[in-house]
Image (tube, rainbow, N blue to C red; front, top):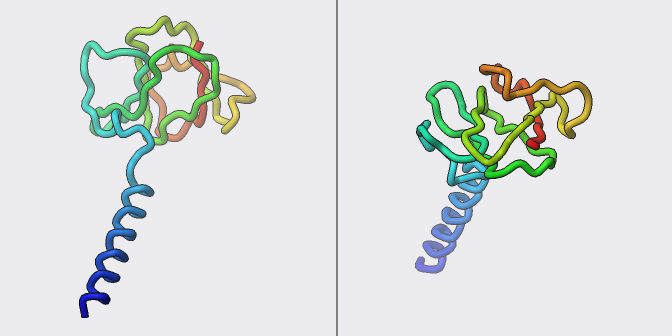
Length: 115
């Protein structure tokens, strides 16, 4: 009886850990954090409710994914000049300067480069 109870507990624990790994966002420091002013770096926000969707501390020129639920962004600090957004997964093709766009529909931009 105890052996089957231990197996059941181990199975439930494994299922819980798998569920959490799939459902938790990749950037837990930013997940669900409310809008704050002032903030630091480049910050992507969701629209409803206004929460932090992702961050970048300093420009690096690397192609990054736009957080899936991002609908707008602000550059608070860090020396960001240009932040072009792309509708492709590899920062190719035409770009739109996200610093000049007030907001966009979630999922419109897939990637960005910050310089």
